[in-house]
Image 1 (cartoon, one colour):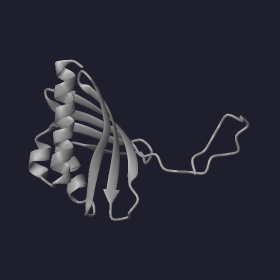
Image 2: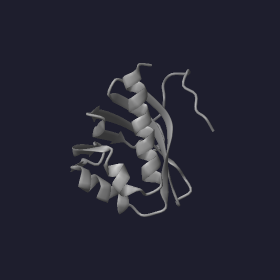
Image 3: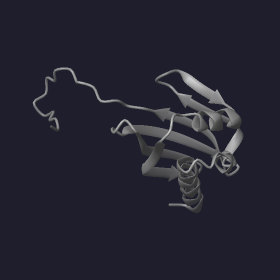
Length: 129
């Protein structure tokens, strides 16, 4: 892994550490002022650091995010995370992060949910209990 990718992963992990401990001002300093946050599934987006920090700060507590996997290439990261709240069932999130000037400039998150699959025609498809 190149040095830039290591720095990108360190920045991402610091971002989530600050979010998990509700250090909103410090977390905001890791964001580009023109940050763009997108959730394609709900067609929601936030433009700007202040709006994004407010979104996190006003989300009903308690919650935390655990970074399961992070793949960095230069200033881009792909991240698999678990979102934990008091519902008792963690949710999986896959996010894509872009950095610029040592700050997070863009985040696109996908929140897959469990669903019952349709009938499969291949005998090779197996399913966990």
